[in-house]
Length: 107
Image (cartoon, rainbow, N blue to C red):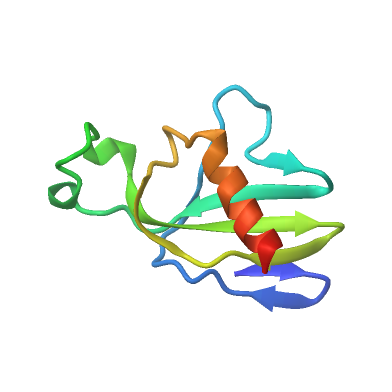
């Protein structure tokens, strides 16, 4: 659950959720213009569902993710992305953040 200016928004992910980190930055978002884009991973998937990737249970990888986009103090949530490997401790390429941002901006 996110709170912004008295408004509550619920993530559409299966809990527990975890913020995806960005290794080489001191913060866990990418900024585009005035917008900050965070990505949250849903509940870790069973390792049996992750066999096509070289990950372990300790990586806590999920097959669900959702972006939180903050612009001038206003929070927007993206649609949930299903089936894409998202590992909070490993992180994601910047293009994934940009894709979430571009899709939200196009609406």
